[in-house]
Length: 236
Image 1 (cartoon, one colour):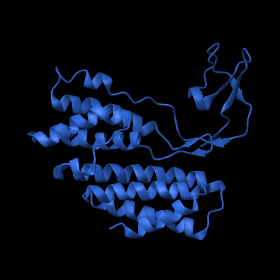
Image 2 (cartoon, one colour; image 1 turned 60 degrees about the vertical axis):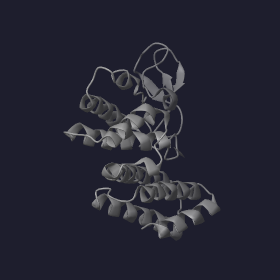
Image 3 (spheres, one colour; image 1 turned 45 degrees about the vertical axis):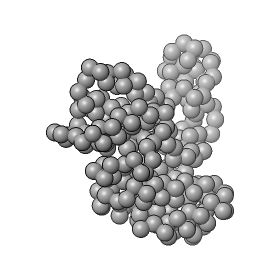
Image 4 (cartoon, one colour; image 1 turned 30 degrees about the vertical axis):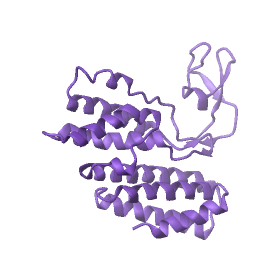
């Protein structure tokens, strides 16, 4: 949505940036009466923290399925509120978002499984340890029983990112090639989601790489755009 991000309080005259605070409340007096003083710009990225520390602190006292439920709740809230257009600027599809999306799907599986294999539990704990720091386990560490969770998480993440890219691009004149690349990306996302994410982890990673190259290409990097086209054509 397009909003006026620079606000001025009607009560005390304080000016602040909604883009920085994520709140319409005046930081000086708390009043909710304010007016926008700038042009409307696209903004989908709400301010939200992602901290798994309270869940990690409960590792010694909570069962794994309880940890999974708590982690899933935090990941769900974070992913739900996150966007990728900030004050009219297209952000990257970042590793923290991807890790949160994957942990959300893995936690759902872990919470439903009656008996976990050691490798599955260790993978869940690795995500829990590092996801809020933007670190993801490498593709070779993904257990075969959890590869669908990574595939579906990344497909969902790219779907949401692509949606924001299209919103961001509404005020821009995309070339036929750029529009086609966005359509091709959407087709790959649809295919992986129809498979419930059950693809090789490397394929899911290539989808993310193609998405990032495409975003850079749409922002003016011609080499990145060419590379995105090659990656999209090479996706299985």
